[in-house]
Image (cartoon, rainbow, N blue to C red; front, side):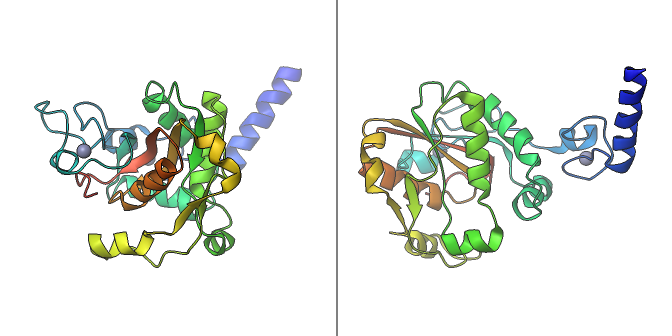
Amino acid sequence: MFEIVRQFLLNLQNICFPITCYNCGKIVDSEGLCQECWKKIRWIGDPKCKICGVPFEIDACALCPNCLRKKPHFDRAVSVFEYDSFSKIMILKFKHGDKTHICRQLSTWMYRVAQDAIKNADVIIPVPIHFLKRLKRKYNQSELLARELGKLSGIPYEPRILQKEKPTPQQEGLSRNMRLKNINGSFGVDSRYFSTLFKKTVVLVDDVLTTGATINECSKILKKHGAEKVIVLTIARVNLGGDL
Ligand SMILES: [Zn+2]
Ligand SMILES: [Zn+2]
């Protein structure tokens, strides 16, 4: 009897609140993507740049031209899939649509692809946003991801170490130099956490790696305050080959 009631309630729940594909919104059996969307996502595998993680067509070199020219401040960047017009839909739903439940799936994917890279890390830190932006958006999506990753990996999650001290004007459409100028000096480390960072390996979490200017600036500040290694972890990355 109990089983019949349980099944009835489950069916009722599926009718009233159907589970839908994170990307296209089609009704699916379980949380995640429908088959078509799964196939269209450009998952990042090998070969790729050993530092910034930009995917390569062929496995001919260890580093991309950008990392060869000038190494970024972080030691390694790992992303789950490429940021393109298709995967953008899911990212935007997560970012602006209050679809916080997508977070659990995204962070599970992030954890799977980075499990090896972060296994000896000491602390997980989200890329912070300025408090005015947070008030407007209600939550910081990088914090949600980093918190989930903390639970999945068992690595301590510390959202207060890195601070966004100055708001950044809109970065979109700006040249590389303007972007760098925009964010220069806008991040800081809370002095109470200097010892937490000293000689530690930090996992820095963000949603999308675009030009890398933000994560590079954050990594610079973390290292300036004693961090030994910074591993960047994002859901998606733009396939531009660094530009750091
Ligand atoms: Zn779909
Ligand atoms: Zn690279």
